[in-house]
Image (cartoon, rainbow, N blue to C red; front, side, top):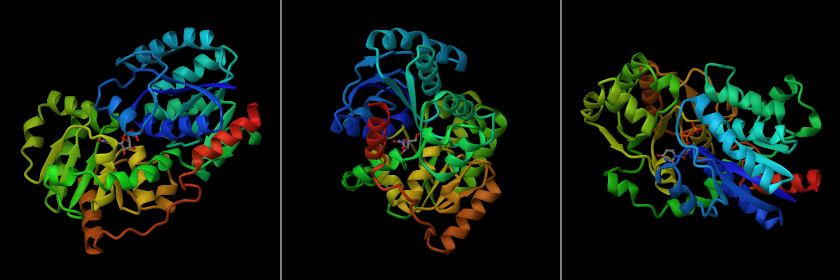
Length: 364
Ligand code: UDP
């Protein structure tokens, strides 16, 4: 059995790493296709090195572009690869443009499609990722879900029961595997941070950084939060560009209690997340990682496609609202940033193993 495993953007790499490993151990012939959606060392190659993902067998080098251009470019470049390699299935992860582009290419060629992290829904179609999720799930033959809400969503959308599997969370497989290594990172020293005395902030969702109005709110939110605790902000390239274009660069860099650094490698970032008082984020992955670590998380969005991080985990939604975020930080600080919550069932480091076993059972 041969499976093409697709990855393309930063959050895909931590998801594909344990899958590729589990497939190899289970004797599945797998090839890695990197679409090139993210291509800089800090957003791509560093993750291959640290997560010990084998070098991609194929790199489509699709690069940046508008949604339509990038999606079309990946489809155009992936089609001859599928025709040439004749896989039994194509596996895609997450919700980025590479996910739907390669999924669509596969099914149009009559190749089975496997989607890992299926079924998540924010119910907000203004989010480009939501469109990618709905479309990919609607054409997938095997749907691996990370939390029970995904099963409900897929059932409601009429996906057949026998195609849906609650596998657990592959991103958390990677987290547990790398946590002890993160303990050796010297990132706290390098950035002048002390355990439990700082907040980690990540911000890059289009709804938060693509308009001047939201960037002004983000600036105010950072200012307000930094009055309470030091903040470290590994700055996403998209957000960096946005602050610059909006003329807000000086205002941000001038915030006294804010440490700005380039996007971090996985091990350094995991060290921050596991030692900070709290995370402030609009990232999907960070909401899950903080829940698995039992660290409080304030999500700067109005909704989440990962409701289990709220119902069982440590997550709270404040939107990009400076007042709400500041009062949530205050509330948490009064309780010494102790998080109430538990790690969801099947977020146990073995999701990829379960996926490999199910794939063999179904496709062999
Ligand atoms: N991450 C990282 N370095 C950083 C910021 C994030 O390694 O500077 C990791 C983080 O641990 C998580 C993933 O990147 O595993 C999340 O990626 P991103 O926020 O880009 O995507 P999303 O989760 O929103 O889809």
